[in-house]
Length: 348
Ligand SMILES: [Zn+2]
Ligand SMILES: [Zn+2]
Image 1 (cartoon, rainbow, N blue to C red):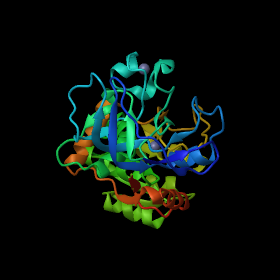
Image 2 (image 1 turned 135 degrees about the vertical axis):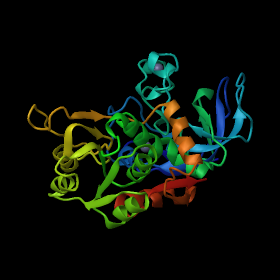
Image 3 (image 1 turned 90 degrees about the horizontal axis):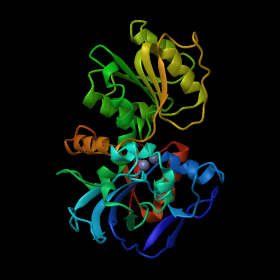
Image 4 (image 1 turned 90 degrees about the vertical axis):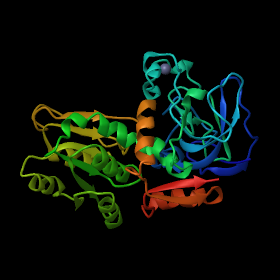
């Protein structure tokens, strides 16, 4: 079969011929229906150095995947060949306290995981291929009725990551509150939809691209602002001087973090989702009283089930552009240039 593989750090991926995987005991092979292209893949190609993460190339890219059960290893029950499924992407040890409640992202026994701190497309072979080997059946989540793998694939990361970030701030988003989404890309535009679907907050979207702001409006944003030096003031002005109850920064560079901190309301949340690598000096008087500044990473298996439900009911619908496996690098190039709208999904 063909697979888009990252051969080494700081190289371009290559489309190559590899053997089809066969499932060992407890494992599942998924025929890929869609594999989302993630901005973090660009960091894998261009920025990561040996030692940055506890795993190394070569491996097949693609960490947001859905498709159909293709082959079951010995002892796997409860799944049927041909059944549409999503793949939960972070693969932990399966037995630590975190993994037991479905939070493999924060596995506390990484030495016992198939790869420490990674998963398919992140150290092990992912879904940018015709088939993906999933090392444990618990990572397979059946798709609810009415959800197609091409739409389900981006929900496993571009949906799950903002969902997890928003869900933990639900208590701060009652009617009358304001949520700000900074960066309306693959994750941010789904974040706007999730805020509208699961909270009563007013949603303000911020980006430096007109197309992205249009997309935010389509997704239900109540107000869109072009990012600049005055963005925080504009957010305050739009909230009667109070500021935003929750700021979700999907970019994470110095400028966006500064904007987020300056725009937050007392007792608000500033959540860093984007891996832009920026920093924010924090001291007692540098942010409004009792603002929580927090990072977040991907999401849990129970949350994936909830996101898939929102997707199946049409409440959350990532904007997707599909590419053939041969054109996967075009998708990444467009992402790099900022010309891609919504999420690119590779359909092998
Ligand atoms: Zn990702
Ligand atoms: Zn674990």
